[in-house]
Image 1 (tube, one colour):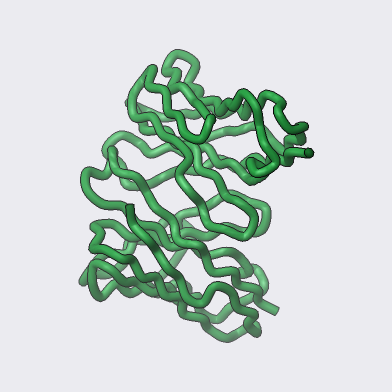
Image 2: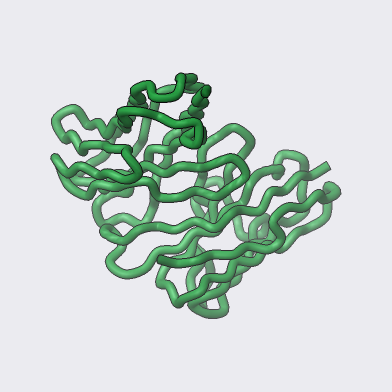
Length: 116
Length: 112
């Protein structure tokens, strides 16, 4: 299994500012993902973080708002840019490895973001 | 497209009661199906999974059977405990795909 840590665990930010969330995995993994979980709602995939190339974004999410880096197989960052109160959510890093269909997907503890 | 529908919560039960949380899905082909649990203040944890029709996933007393004919993956537990209080998410990963689709989540409260 993979152990995932995220920093910060929570933050309170002012609108118009940006926050970078870090995701560190204890082993090399093929796939890394970023999800958003808005209050009382389910998880929505933001993007797949690709090592050495641009992330692949889901419909409704754009690079200018959520820039992502993945410099190696164990680390990724998600930036929430020009924040508004609507960005208040839990942001979760997730990883998977091996044969995708069969492999388990692991989730980090999440970063709880409140935008005032 | 693929989708997951699960019963709305919250579900409130007394300790030792029987639990069922319904989950149905829409997908082409043969997806993999999952139940995840999120305890208060924590991240998601995989509870159980099934990757083909008629497979039964089980863990910690919870069970779910992959029913292709009814496109369902209902979660059951024979005797719940207070420590089972959490939010439960049904999820689907399409065959050959990279995207996991989550249901809305069902909050379970278990009273002593």
